[in-house]
Image 1: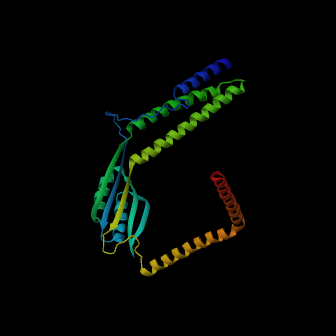
Image 2: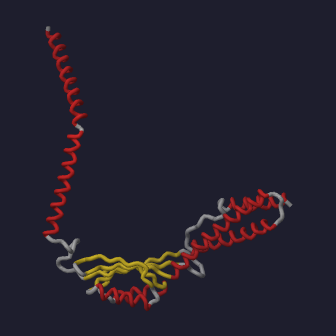
Length: 267
């Protein structure tokens, strides 16, 4: 019984190594022309210039809600005092992505638009095959665990391999679940920009007084840096002054020695 169990377990391990050590075949990229159930991830981006960003934001939120969508992230920044630009990350059903972009375009003037598609049918199919093979191995390993044996080492080996296979199955199932969500729901990046006006600058709160204060603060900071360097020079006087004197004395001696040599040569 022990010999047959060990031989069967060895054949499972050889099979696992033949599948790439961990039992997962390398994922293949590629397009499957005749696939019946395609897995396509569609995403989009839309930038719209609007007269009033606050009204446009409320209208956009209402439109997204009617399309069974959800805003997952929102950023805003100030363009001029009291006026904000908005950027949204929206998840909508993939079959409503174009409809959502069309409706949101009516909020103002469309400045940019993009739709991208990524066919992951081949990768999805490869992962399904990997899951099928791993689940079959899990079943065989469980059958091995149920066989009686007096060799604890065999039991531990099978248990470790079973745990490894189970972990791979869970990881791949999570990957497939994320893919299913991304296929079912598209990501739309929506930007709402206010109409440009004279006076729109990088810092909407710039004033002469504010700029003057910043200049004075820079001057003070530079003065602090210069003062710190002077203090360091004074603090290191006990070190660099004696060193300077020694070098100066050595230099004088070398010069005097050269002069003596020159005088001797002239004589």
